[in-house]
Length: 401
Ligand SMILES: [Mg+2]
Image (spheres, rainbow, N blue to C red):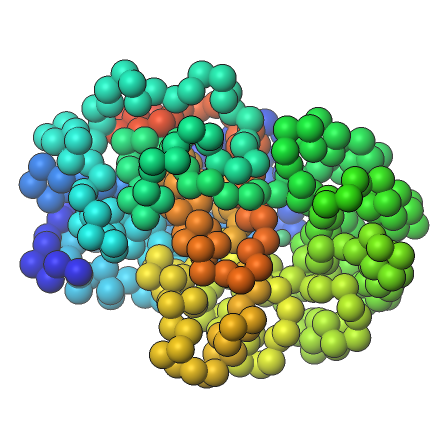
């Protein structure tokens, strides 16, 4: 990194409404609070997104807001590095903006240079989105951008994303039973179902029917958000093993029990053939490494936007070989699914970029949990340039915080 670079921090909070309320471990989540940060150094501008989730082990929105509000003086390599580990979402958002400001970390030209002096806001007409894309998520990124180097995310072209297989979230209830068909026809192959909210017997029946109904090549992953009882977890994993023996395996069961039930999660992982993924248990890179050190042999779901500095996330796979087996990062040691924290277009590009980088390294990459467009109301924060997102966030965020 450039040790001499010095930038000015600006930031703005935002509140985004969901199209329909999400049910979470803390109850109904109707609006999403976050912060867009902007770093300015001379005529160079870069942006990041701070997106805490209330029931994950990261800072609260208020803590991130207070931290940015109290920032005094220039942003430098030293002050970025000094952001406390207790603020992992802030580390990610500011760290990402810091990398982009430098055209870092692959020696790329600065993403905002094409809009020199304009704060990265300008955009030529030929850079507009393909209007046929609407806001439907694409299973393999936006087609037709094969010349794009995904190592050079361009904040003037936030909707140009690396090609990446993504998972499709199915609706709950019996609607799930045929809701995979349209996305299947569009090329989606990995489907995710939230479980643990309805009648348990009916849910088990529905899961079995759904899995048996998927065509060959289809994958089904289940996410319990830590809500199952131990008995329910046993029942679900036994069902998964039975289905697997009959040729209909579940891809994995995500967080069947809450993080506190660590010993039970470990025992389940050793007992059943159906893979288990940790999500709420591993908000940050530090927590993920801790679980590896404790011998976790299953999958990890990581939201990079909550996990700490982007370079800490990359170190999960880049450390391989340097640290030997210290973190069980041997050839098959890291089984990782990158997923969304419901970011703005700025944070979504960041998460997609990191997911792509991981996929490039992985021996058997899994679909990323980043097919989430359409959950939030159209409020301008999914605009195709970071400059436009900044304009909208200034408009929308008034009165928040
Ligand atoms: Mg999950």
